[in-house]
Picture 1 (cartoon, one colour):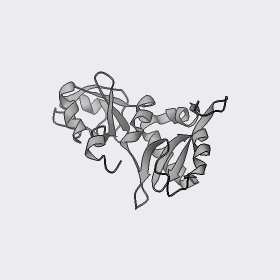
Picture 2 (spheres, one colour):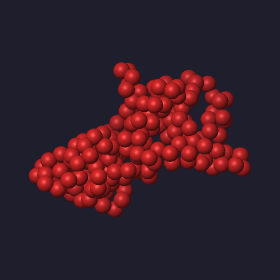
Picture 3 (spheres, one colour):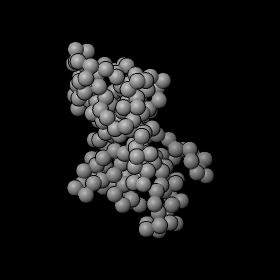
Amino acid sequence: MRPLDENETTVVFEKIFKFVGNNLKNIVENPSHEGPEPEAGRYCFRLQRNRVFYVSESLVKRATNISRKNLISLGTCIGKYTHAGSFHLTIMSLNLLAANAKHKVWLKPTSEMSFLYGNHVLKGGLGRITDSIVPGDGVVVFSMSDVPLGFGIAAKSTQDCRKLDPNGIVVLHQADIGEYLRDEDEL
């Protein structure tokens, strides 16, 4: 497990910034109260194989006793690098994104299952949407009872959604909590 280099950090922060905006500062400066130290530590990003983890510094110090090949996971896996070198956020980053989300979409109860099966969000299933969303923004998808369901990319702006037909795609699916069941072997 090693720290991210400058290019890797830039790619990871750009991807997270797409979803949380200026709240990225809250993620980076989040105090950690884990470990025996009386003072609050910090969270950091670490790379193990091709996966990026969000973990407290005190836990990283304690994990130095474990060899790299024996260490499977540490902290929260927020994403992974593909063989081509691009970075993809995984569903395990949902709690981090939901707590700091800039743009949110709420689904009607009738369309929650469709989203959890991996389908895009349609206008007919949209309950609420935050203002000032532009196409290409990262969006966190919630149920009407504020339970985070997943995240995706906005296909239409907030104004375009108002005049869109009910079968028009509003949010392009990227990840949802149904992946815990569908892809449990890979997570």
